[in-house]
Amino acid sequence: MHRRAFLKGSAALGISAGMAQPLSGAAKSSGERGLSNGIVQTVLGAVDVSALGCTLPHEHIADGPYFLDKWPNGDRAAFTAQTIKSLGPARAAGIRTIVDLTTYDVGRDIRFLEQVSRKSGINMIAATGQRFFPPQYPGVSMPSRTIDGLCQFFKGEIEDGIDGTGIKAGVIKIGIVAKEPTDLESTGLRAAVRASRATGAAIRIHTHAVDRAADNLVAILDEEGMNPGKVSFDHSDDSGELEYFLGLVRRGYSLGMDHVHRGIRPNARPSFERRAECIRRLIDAGFAERLFISQDVEFGGTLLPDAVKDFRSRLDPVEGVLFTTRRLIPYLRGIGVSEQAIRTITVENPRRFFGLTM
Ligand SMILES: [Zn+2]
Image (cartoon, rainbow, N blue to C red; front, side, top):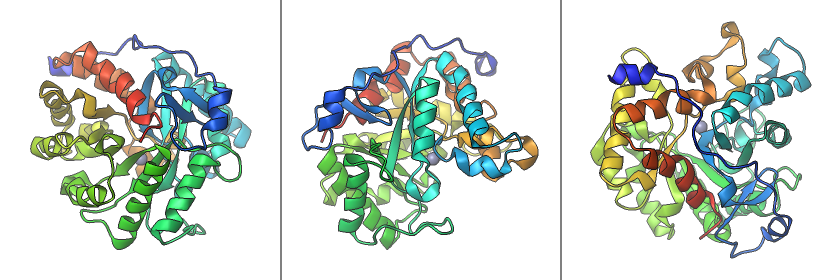
């Protein structure tokens, strides 16, 4: 039965909201403190949170141009056109918003993201923050190594815009690579909290869930006075430990279950089934409001021919950003997850989480 549910394709989600229309007044005031509870920053401007609709909260579109040199089918314009075309099925499946967690140090191209959002009809939320401490890409240097300096950089991308464009970030992403944060990662995390508290932007943290890494970040977040309701520990499903999950959601933190497809690989641990079961058990325990589902796809990599795909592109699901709607949600239904819970996770949680509130 589980397998049948898994294999069954899904119809478009019965969840829709129109493409967000920028609120010109809100866009003008979004650099001020004390933002309205109901506003979220997209790459096309500030919009009311009700416009988000079904949302994928952890994806990577903005690094698309990074894949251009491996792409045999033309120039940037052709690549951009193919990206927009390839996102058509996602919009048809009911996806209205994609949160792009590509930070400055891993190839973020904000004009590319803006163009893709405008032409695809999918809202995009861009991220400030940092993935690696220090950056690992050649030629990329950190804007600062102090808490205050990084905080100013993050705040600047949220309040003034990214790379001088005026396109504002709507979320903060921080990468913590291993079980314990390094000194520099701790600096970045503290800076993120201070930028969050000043702007209302939420924080999503790349965590090494296999080692229960989030348990080692809670003390820093508490010390900095962070509201747990504005923090998501992403890649959490890489841990199959329900007790780890419950410890975090009971404190008010959210869990990003965005690697579920990785469980499909032969001998993967936790398996796809175990990851989905953990989601269901958390819902049954009353924590649907603390969950997110996504698939952490580097979208540009999915456009490459198989022969030139790298390790990371091969990790991504063959369905790309359609994995959640085509595979995961139908499977969750098959193991007893309600439509209301799916709506809570895909629509209501993003609305609350990404709204610019303290
Ligand atoms: Zn990611």
